[in-house]
Image (cartoon, rainbow, N blue to C red; front, side):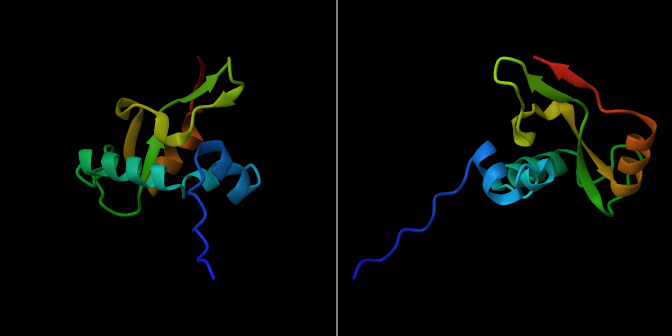
Length: 106
């Protein structure tokens, strides 16, 4: 009897299709996003860059990139650090209610 190999870790769009049926939000559970999120939280000293709270922290994309040649959006963890900031849930919600996150075609 042979042991079964564990399934390969899905990457990028494959993860999106297998785990979420097309939901961007599911990518935020991907191991690559978790790694990037941790990096940004550490850089921002685990504080909201707006109000300095250390509660309910989230990492916010300051813009989204649509890759015209591929007809798809950049994956959440592929953004450079200067386009990601730590916000508490309250500041994040206020920001989304007040401003639309711009989408840049690249």
